Image (tube, rainbow, N blue to C red; front, side, top):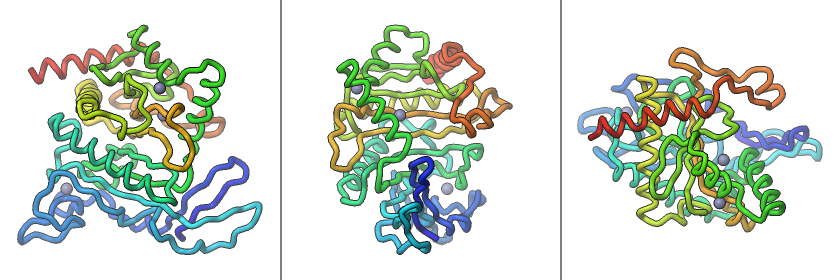
Length: 331
Ligand SMILES: [Zn+2]
Ligand SMILES: [Zn+2]
Ligand SMILES: [Zn+2]
């Protein structure tokens, strides 16, 4: 079964991809499908003996360029649609142990360039309404391959979380005449207490009403709708602040902190979204402490109402101190 089904109760499309059950699950390092194909060694998914950064189509995709017809019949109550779109894997480096936290800023900037290129190319396809760049890091958030990599999904409609943010931004412009994210960035810079790190072009902060204890958002200081609007120095600044945020996580916890990193940019359908889309990334780690995870339970899953048992100002202070420590450590 590879299809999309519409839930008439929530108004959301859900993706079905039953072949994904057969995915490779946490293989040993010497059987890693994302390592280069070394001379004399087994063939991996990447037929290169070395590489800097590589993108290819996910072998177990939930969205594909030429999707099969759905297995179930469509009806007015239960609309069904083909899984049109794309699912890509972006392998950050040919080194099995070199993730975003370990590589230098120039190399992260190359990955930012690739994200921008894929956003442009996938977004230019007629069937693609939204390009979503993300990374799942760590077994706690469901990673099935340890080799540092991220993913890119190209959806045929704007997904629910992005849809809600756009609707809120649209309402904010109607009420106040300004971009809500620009207002948030200005407020966080003025308050300072939730700031984790900042540079000439980006701000990293724990949101005022964070869902997760160590949630961090990274936003462009300037109003830009997507990576394509960033200048080269701004792309470098994004690379630098990502390194600092992840470095702060890892030095505060003492291990690579599992997280989901989500990038929100303008949709690529035919709509006019420049004024309501403000480029930002959201880091959502599940850890409350080094030993304890925050599980989504009754209030979050059943009611959609998050309860956070930490003060964002406190977690921001801890991350800020760890970020400064990382810089000092790098000399
Ligand atoms: Zn590997
Ligand atoms: Zn803005
Ligand atoms: Zn967002």
